[in-house]
View 1 (cartoon, rainbow, N blue to C red):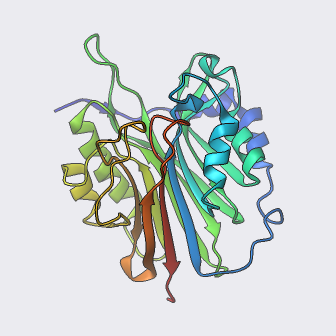
View 2: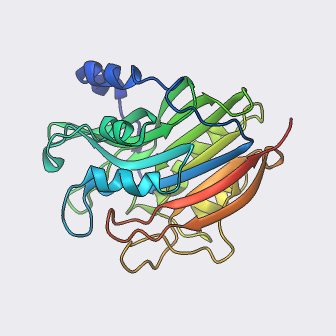
Length: 279
């Protein structure tokens, strides 16, 4: 069995306190002016740290791709903040500015002088944020791995009640890690039905794989009937990006699709429209 440990995020938080504070100060209460509705437009997007398939780092291009779906909630993976390779850009904050949404960033590791991790964009008022480390196997000489985590943002939903939205990213090259991460997601976020919850992320796992089967014990998969592939973006072969929800009684899936955007990232965005049901 692989040896797992949890990343100590306290160190990360201490080193980027000012940066994180600046994100938290972005208002999410008054800037949207959206009409009240019981439908939720959800986007999940691994943005490949801003680098498109032409090799260019272009956050503006990503923002345009995000805005095309007019989302209420966006789960982002592979987000750089102050990282050398992507020009020291605060990608989370920049995407918030370009989309007119509020943002919360959930770092999982230090990288090239900055931070790397997951993020959430939302047009709803934010009530609470939890950053949850996930189990992972440390790198060896033979295999490079990355710390994994999830950021859970509780918002005031369109019905005025709390709604939880989670962005996560499972390990890419250790099958046992993905199994452990799926179990951890269920443990931390699927223990009760009090708050309707949406989980979105790059699970690095196909629909019939063990990690997805574990998630489906507690979550419903908002996936199109064809389970259209989401990666790689130019010639997609595998469905590894998902949107899930729970409890099933609180949501109705209206639409689910993979968006054709072959250039902005190495993944295609996954989009769903969910309708909130009455308690």
